[in-house]
Length: 172
Image (cartoon, rainbow, N blue to C red; front, side, top):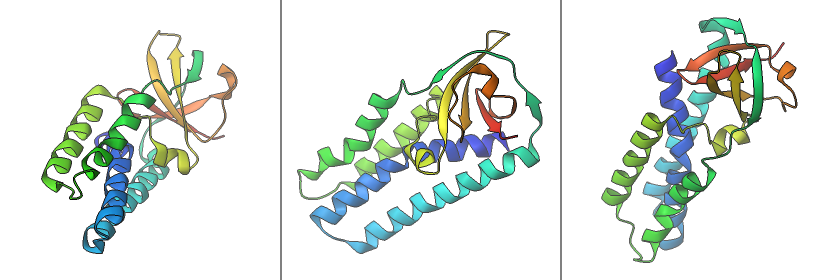
């Protein structure tokens, strides 16, 4: 399950690129045969990611975590916002180059997958999730996804491990 979780976390973190591409297509050509599939793909990624996050506590081992520090995990915001805006740069040509945009999108997916930087995820934010950087007593740092607002270490008890460096808070 962890590979599927990571895949859909990566796809939803990069999905705003597809939404921006759909918006550019709307502004330039209003070609609904391109716009609708892009939006449907984003909706599919989002719904399936939400499903994976809801199934994770049932399928993965739940354990307690002792954290020594917790802080918001928003340090990749600039890079991702720039990635989301790439299709707008192409809009000045009045014709979207889908081969180029597809390559750029795949490049961002590969980078997000390999850099473990997929926790900056506006679509998960819309679904009510927050990301925090959590350091354990063993001095390991993870990204914690939770629907709670965390103010102190004791706010996090039970988690399951979604990916190598990402935990999901289990509300209790």
